[in-house]
Amino acid sequence: MTDVLVIIPTYNEIENISNMLNTVMQLPDDFDVLVIDDGSPDGTADAVRKAMEDFPGRIHLECRSGKLGLGTAYIHGFKWALKCDYQFIIEMDADFSHNPADLTRLYHECKDRGADVCVGSRYITGVNVVNWPMGRVLMSYFASAYVRFVTRMPLRDSTAGYVCYRRRVLENIQLDKIEFKGYAFQIEMKFKAWKKNFKIVELPIVFVNRQLGTSKMNSSIFGEAVFGVISLRMKSIFSRL
Image (cartoon, rainbow, N blue to C red; front, side):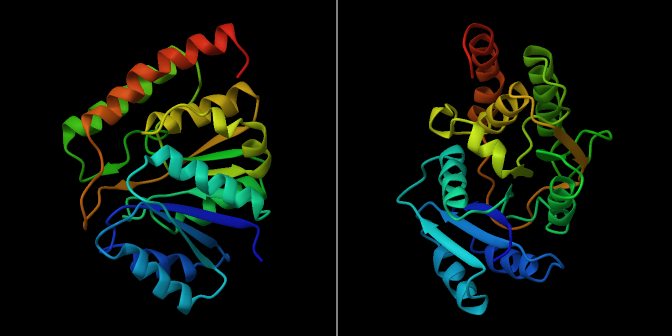
């Protein structure tokens, strides 16, 4: 068995998931994949089951009933990965906004170069986002700047969803106490890792807006990210994370 697991949450990703899984399976490193599907009515889970037949033992599927939130999907996946003894766990999207080729870079930054958390960053070398409306780019960029200002966490892309965690990070974060379910989940995970003095490295990636399927983003997601960081900061001052 490989030591690295890629977790991919899905909801109605039938246009992307088969191609994504085939692409990951062809990479030079042996990545196992866990798809966590939240009851997609479009047949996403069936497409994953077909891929499981093509790549036995390397692709896994966990089905949940209904849309329960991105954060809870990843927590579910983290616990599954720890139970199965994976040493490196990577989050990524199903829609090719994250280039699968970058999996190798994130993985080896942790495995070979000592990072505890490696973040695929859209903003570490400027703004590397393709095909997003300008308003969305500005909202995301300034949300990350705001998070950096409030929390003092020295990351350029705190809301990034392309992240590799070393096992010990997930073991030391109290996963059952993670509060946020939307994209503020990404901030909370990085913040708690940073507060525990884990080594976090940002690598530049190019983020490409999805070509197929429907985006799950909405304004409430950004609202949670913006307002939730105040709570994170205050709790870190008055209590132990």
